[in-house]
Image (cartoon, rainbow, N blue to C red):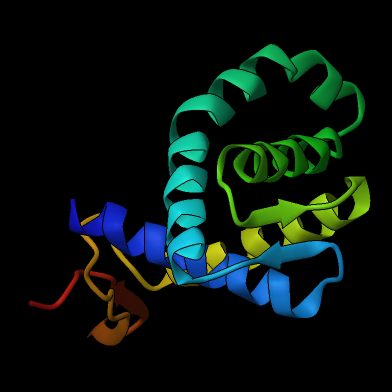
Length: 138
């Protein structure tokens, strides 16, 4: 549960960054921002995997570029469902989805599934080889 909440706040932060950087994406307030983060997290968890499966042939033919359109659709769907969050047009949706994906990737790179910060340490265990430990610290 904690990991999901962290991802909701990460999505909200990413949407806020997209609204500040890109013209065509607007957020009216903090409540709309949190609602958009929640709805986007739910869409990414439930709707997006189904869409990826249904559009797999198109994605393969375009060598994965269709995923940009799919992510833009998910961001647009979020704006359609949440009052106070607006995405105006195709290109703001595409670039906004790219920015949201990058910010979410950065946040998820440092967090485990339980919402804990993952510390990557480097230990030398053997004289001729290195071992990298990625266990979360409590």
